[in-house]
Image (tube, rainbow, N blue to C red; front, side):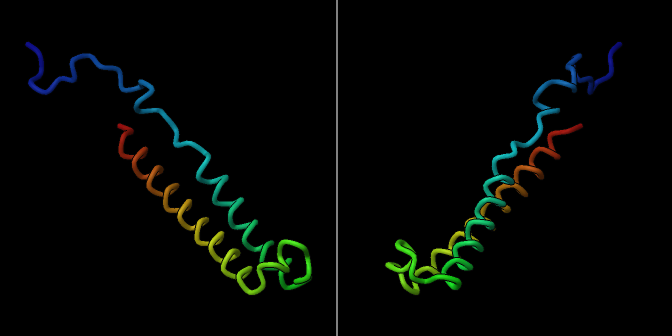
Length: 89
């Protein structure tokens, strides 16, 4: 007689359980942070560059929004890691 809670012979090593989270949130997070910091640094070093000079102090908003976007990607990465960890047996 079989156990009342058998898994029906399913294989727990299927791609559903061993799938790793994608790397795009981590790459986007790092790229966004580096771009945001470089945007602010370049604005302070040479505020007369063509695109940067036209924006004026709005450059700080652009740089900080890129940093915030990096935080959003970090949250997406954290959620995907937690969800993929729950799927593993």
